[in-house]
Image 1 (cartoon, rainbow, N blue to C red):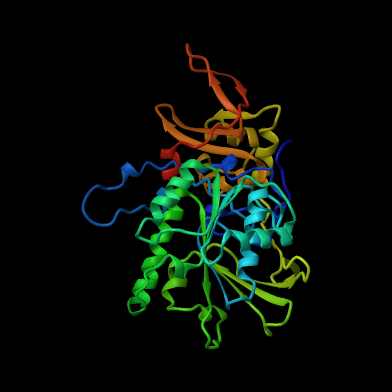
Image 2: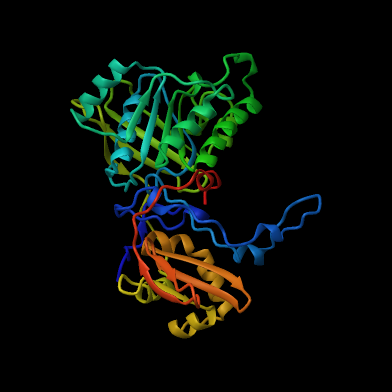
Length: 402
């Protein structure tokens, strides 16, 4: 049996990212590409007004999910990384960039390898060289790119990011250090609306390219009851972002720090860190949030016994699958349950699930990731499977996230 993992994670994000594991994955971001949902949006009404889905149509859709950059910690979308000046944000960004670009676990968090672009807009290359040497020594890394200049939001940054991702289709993370360097210069225009707009524009870049954009920003001087109210600017920044990190210290001279994490699709947590006095890298002390365990799902275990390395493909109707699994479910309920658990089936069991309607009814396909179904051109019957090397996604696939 292949791909069965312990169903334990630091947290589970909601919906599309459900089912991440603390176990280190051997897959890169491009190995686990996103698959389009099965519901045909053309079925939606073309009349003026809201384009709606019923609850039944929603459960009839398959969302394969988007694998996290760092399990339980960092997902695709737009994130803020906030802290006081000179607290160690840039060292943290260098550490994060290195771990993602090499696929090395960050503390107890599994990391998926991907190309990283670090826009260090408040540094120069000499300072970057010294910082990285102190943290990691001399190490070759062709997946981590740096630039100390960039255009502004709405002034060319989108084209620069598109060009970079086109040249490096396995890009998973772009760090912009800092937000202030790429937003408008007119401080008088700063408001909730302008803060929300600038994050929304950058968020569109993350969405269309299927990546995580991490924006470094500063805290304000005033104290607040909620630490996330310390983000400089209005609530529009956090309101538009998918998540945020705040790095803080009780005393500036201390080597101990707190990293508070919040996000739309993840569990809030507080991470206690200690800074290494030699390398200035951040080390994990403890995590305040308890481990989250996904509830067991016996149906997925049964599917993992059915679809294995020796039998990498199953094709048939929901009724046939019910009989084969001896499942106490009606065929329609089985299909809906698989639709909901498609991301978890892929992440934890390495099995790709899809279904479609045909003239003869609904048909389910289950196959090990990497296997390709081959059909006989004369009668259309399945006759074998091969495991080729995976090509890069096309521009159209990358733009649609499919």
